Length: 152
Length: 152
Image 1 (spheres, rainbow over the protein chains, first blue to last red):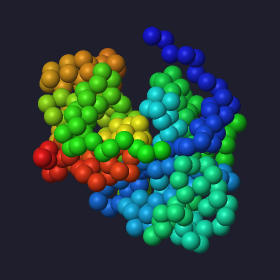
Image 2 (image 1 turned 135 degrees about the horizontal axis):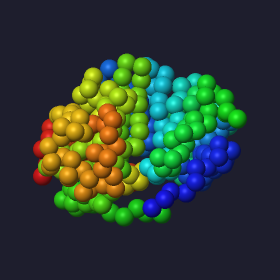
Image 3 (image 1 turned 90 degrees about the horizontal axis):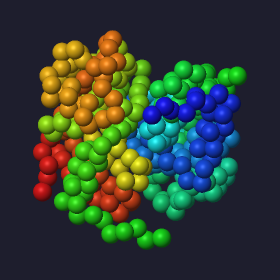
């Protein structure tokens, strides 16, 4: 079966933004520590050009991110992927988050971490590199953002 | 909306095996290096209780796995997940793989790495821990395999 023609970069960028701003967006979030990789699905919000995650501040994801400052995220499915290399910009304990984060996260997702209480925190990630591809024939030109700047 | 009742462990285990043996299975494969996490989708085959991946032997996934020996894999979607912590057991360059690997991989997936030539390799991973959950109410009892042994 012949795959469809590769999408031009502008289409891919629009498709990436559509995925990031869909009603409830789950990402696969990979982080790492000295003892190896960690990976877990988390619900994200795309706010002010940042990826906002919410998770327990004592989770392995939060601890790894605090230590290394970097994560690699994937939006699927596996044959229509968006890969995002991101750096940790800021962390807010739930009770101390500014309203653009807390209200924005609740409005974009299907839960409000403020109701979870405890040690939940928002992690604000700045995308550094974004890639998007479907099949093999889209591997070329897959990089849409480099060093935090959209190309083209 | 109330989620369905949590699945009992035997059902989850059957669901995991159904996912692993479905016609074409793509996994998110997280590995790590000193400079951080790596994550990429790869097509797997489940053969002889092992996860078989095929990728360029010079890819970051192959290099990271050779260095650390561990990967964490996810099968989705994000609200029906299987998480697998696995260790690298063996690596075969495509031309030197035994037939259970090479024929088995081609029969289980939609491509045959033997036709790709070059530096493609099979990575044989032994699952050490397997977890499966759908929603929050399945987080309890999510661990189905510990230290390479199915529980229960």
